[in-house]
Length: 471
Image (cartoon, rainbow, N blue to C red; front, side, top):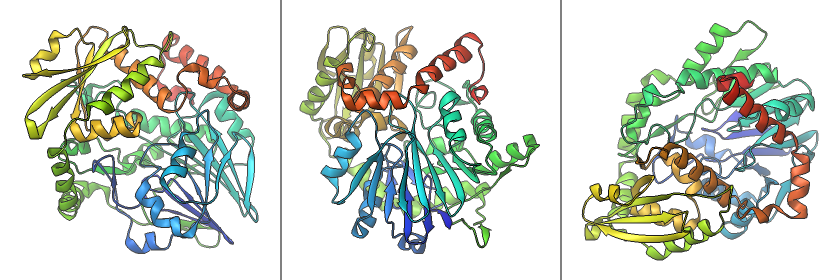
């Protein structure tokens, strides 16, 4: 049995005739040329991928990457998805690809996918599709937590249901837009520092009792001109290991595994030594290498016109699906500059009156005259894509936006909007969509999360603890 780290959040596990690929994004960029793998996987590594099975943890493009999936489509691997409240992931696979076998698997149920090769999916987070995967093969046990920040009873279920984990993979960063994309905010003064994310990673690793803890699903760089500034907040895996080693007084080890690094039962670790301290040089080299692709993306936006019908179709349906307590009792807007006509549009969503409107304004200062809670500024191309493809829930991760807070409670309203967009695009709004036999059975299997929500609120709101104290 052996496994190889392919890229940012992509893992390849092989035993006998079974080859499992998890979260394939290994070519090109994602999020409109904003995110790029760091380090970039080499061509020979990509060519070696011949999966018999593919598992997707969740919907975001750095885990569910169209171009990468099409690269291995010729091998016709079985697609395995977490069985969540929605059928969005399944529907997109049927619509956009030509895979012949697609399977949804239940939370907490072990599935055999090959000789002495079992997987168990654990979903977490009632709002979005997110999951961890336990892989057991050849008497080796891996927990790929990826982006799922599982804690409480839900984590105890995972730990108690399997033998000791030999390897644990988890992210050590956040892809969220707050505070980085908020106009006037200083990310260095955020209540969550890079060290805080390291401590989350370390405490999670301790809670899982894994032998080897691998920093994972956090190594990408920004090459888009509007997001390159966010490279200064890169969560360096080397820093994670150094802090882990300082705090560690147990049998556990933190191992850095950059793209191409592998472990096998026969030979142990064979790691690729990547020097993360040269990230600035690597960013400059990657920018030059991908210059034409990035410039073409910018030109597409310069040629784009606002598709008003996409905006109205998306947001009218969205606000119609919202009811108390899942409602938006405030107004907000998107600020869109149509470059070919030099026109500025203010696309307004009034959650209280449940209507939408588009205004043409002469300059940005007019946004303060419309009683808005907040405004999200982004490009015409991205706004059209999000409205047409129903992809606002992945938009924020791109960081190709600027958030302008206006009202006194705009922070609270913004967070509620972002949560409800996730809820809506994951087929959980209107709330009546959850009332089905399928979803009832899913909820019963995931009953622990209800207690975890109360535990989280108790720890964060009453005890005023840090997020790292969840583990």
